[in-house]
Structure formats: C-alpha cells, structure tokens
Image 1 (tube, rainbow, N blue to C red):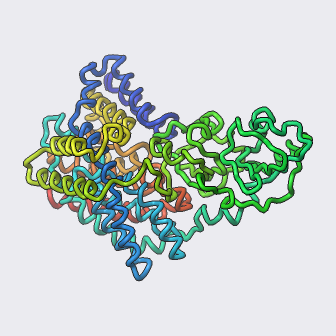
Image 2 (cartoon, rainbow, N blue to C red):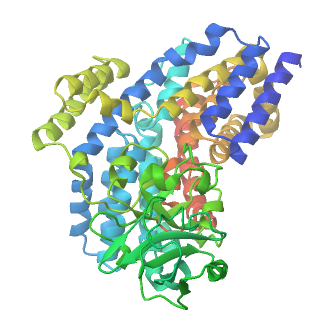
Image 3 (cartoon, rainbow, N blue to C red):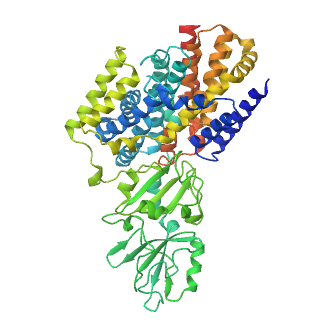
Length: 593
C-alpha cells in the first residue's frame, strides 16, 4: 500500500465517522475531505472541480426546480387525498395510497412528495380515527421503492449515471434500473400492506397528546397592578432570559399575544403563559407583583389566534439549526414562532427550551405568528408537517399552469424514453419552458434548488476520483473478493450490497453510492463480470434505506409526526431490506451473470 492509498483511506474513514456522528452538515464534511485531497496533491484542481460540471449533478439541479413546480401545482396531493378518501378499509386505503406514491416518486424528487403528503395523511388519519403511525413509514418506504425505478427517481441514480459517463462508460437509460428494481418494488409494496402493516406500531400522535398533557407544557403567572415593570417591555421587565422557563404567550382580556417579542409591553392583569421546566417557575416568586397560579385553564389550542397557530416541524439533515441551542438561533425573531416543546425519539425533552441543542429529526411544537408561513416557505431548516392555511403569497398555481407543467413533464419524459433527448437536455429545456411561461419565477426556481445537496454531490465526485486514482478502490475491491471468495460471484454481490446498504444508513445515500462505485467497478473487472451489474446493485442498495430514520430524508420527515421510535424502523424495515436485497441480487444474477 502506498502512502497516497493510506492517506485516501484514512480521510475517507474519518469522513464516514464524522458523517455518522453528524459533527457538521454532510456537504461541509465531504467538501472538507475533498479539500484535504487537493491540499496534498492527491487530485488536481481540475479533478476537484469536475463534479461541479458533471451532467448528473446538473440534472439533479434541474430536477429540484421541476419538483418544486409540480409540488406547487397541488396535483399530486389532490389525487392522493381523493384516493385515500375512497378506501373502504384501512389496508385498502393504504394500498390505493402507496401505488400512486411509488409511481410519482419514480419521476419526481420524493422528498417534496413526502413533505407535502405527511400533513394530508395525518389529517385523514385523524378524521378516520386511525393512528398515523400506520401510514407514515409506508409513505416514506413507498417513495423510496418508487425512486429506484427510473433514472430520475432519486439524485443517487443521477449521481451514479454521471459517474458512469465520467469514466467513459455507457450511462443509464430512463428505465435501465427498472428491469432489476421493478420486482423488488412490487414485493415491497405487497409487504407493506400485509405483514408490514401488522408490525407497524399504533401510536397516539403528538398533536393529540399535547392537549392531554398541557399541564406539562404550560404554567401561568398573573401580573398584578403593583408589578414594578407594568407598561414596560418584556426585556426591561427581565422576563426574557429566565432560567428554565420561556415566555411563550400573553393572555390579555380577549386578546392573545404570541409569540411574545422583546418589545412587547407588559400590562396589569396580563396572564403570562410560560413553557419549560415547571420546577423552575419558582424563580419568578422573587419578582414582586407576579402571582404564580398552581394550575392553568389555558390550553395550547386556546393560544391560537387569527394569525398564529400550533404547528409541528421536523428539523432537516441540512438545517443551519443543527448542533446549536435554540436561544442561539434567534428562532422567534427568524421564524416568527415560539418553541413550545421539543420531542426526540417520541419523548419530550425536559429542559429549558433555549438550552436544547437541536438534532436532525427533532420535532418542534411551535406557536406561530402571522409571518411564519412565508418565512418557513423560504427556509430549508425544517419540514412543516402540519396542514397550513393558504397564505396569500403562497397560493397554488392556476389550473392551466398546473396542467401545462404536468403535461410538459410527461412529454419530456416521453422524449427521454425514446432516446430523442438526454435527461439533462430534456430537463433543461423543461425548466426554460417553465420560466418562459411564467409557471415558475427565477426567484422560486432559485429557492427550489437545494445547493447543499449539489455541493455534497459535486464534492463526492472528487472523493471517488481519489479512490480510483490512488488505487485505493482496487485495494478495497481485492479485499472484498477475498472475503467472498468461498461463495463466488454471488457472495461478492451479497457483500457489495450489504456494505452499500450499511453505508447508506450510517452516512448519506449519495455519499454511499460515490464511495462504493469505484469499488464495484474494480471488483467487477477483477471477477471478469460486466461492471454494469455491480454498479446497478450499488445504485439500488444506496437508495434502499429502510433501517433507520437518519439514513434517508423521507424517513426523517415522518419520524416525529408518526411518533416513531428508532426500533420501529428496524422492526418494519429489516424484513423489507432482506426482500429488496434478495430480489435485486437475483435479478442482477439472472440478467448479467
């Protein structure tokens, strides 16, 4: 082993540990690893930036814009809502629901689909007295099963396609993956509505529990006439940075002030509603003119007013809020919302709200103000999983634009299928068409692009190049072949798939695909097998994330709203992972080996 190989493998190992421990955002971690290779001369500047002009990466950028347009059209959510309402039984409704989800996810980014449908599913479940935990994991898994069907189904597929082209190999056609993944997707859907449905937990959702547990959320303090800070601001009254408690709202006659700003004036007779650690409310006893009520008849629902409401959000993988205390994020000023409670692993965190350090997957219960919807729509920090009333600035597009957007997408998919246009060319034309027809504005297009994902993908190309260039990929491939040698090519397929699936759960799907791609190519070459067989196996394995809430964005989105625990993903996802793996390996072996 040369020092270059050792250095590359060491950096990759450290990168994977950092990704697993979430020490920073994934795109930053992978970018730092890329710069390390550039700094010591492992790769050239041209090789380092090659990923930023790769066709696969640029196609992903186009698809972000297109997915945003289709999401705004509202056609998918209206169709699914209609299908849910027609079901005569829970399982029939689930089946009618999952099939179109998988179909839509084959051609659209599955993250916005799951974000859009999560609140709709929860509302439908509430109306039919069904636990949303029976529907939300299937929603995520069905979107993943749909994503592995086509080239444009997930960014991972396009990333591998770009890697193939970069190596001078033939890339994927639109349905190359389907010949292997279609049986796995069908088997997976059948499993979800049969055995999987029985295994799924039956949890009470957070929004139902919040009413039952309001005494654990709220405490009330009455402002007397002799309070020294009457007619002064909240900040001047010393009510902002209290230990363990947070001033959430003010009940004043028939009005309610929420969220409370530093400049809000305190008046005699105000009922100050605090949230946080109830035992810490004693700190207010030292302030003359404040009377602590032993209980409160104010519920969270009663704090909602004409502008604000109770909203649940899930912190995303790429959030700028990660690993920061809530008080450091200026959450209230940034989003016009007060944090009532934070739930993690289906448990409320018993701590002062401001001191809670946020992690990906945390569910925040918010009491929002009038500007929350507009600000949330412009943020990538969290996913809103509560149905919101339509804001005048966030209205769905008109009917003709919605149908024009959808039909033009279908037309472009048809041209790609007939090999009349490449995927990148077709999607680029479609984005320009949307802009010319004013179906999407330049600002909206920019907001839809997830630049952190593009940075991760582009940086990961450089990581893959370093693995190829130094021979590190070949070295790992030789080790993999030695391990699987007693079982032949079939053993190599199993080991390659298992490693890819494990990396996906520990890091990210795109990073796992890029890391395993050079190993798959080198292993196939050494075994004398068509490399496409091993590459397709890695592509599907990198997206088949069913074992944890952190391995895939859609799993994370439904984690809190479904009230799930980590073990629920293992219980439901492990049998599904085995089914998908067995079907994929069998099809690859049948077609290519």
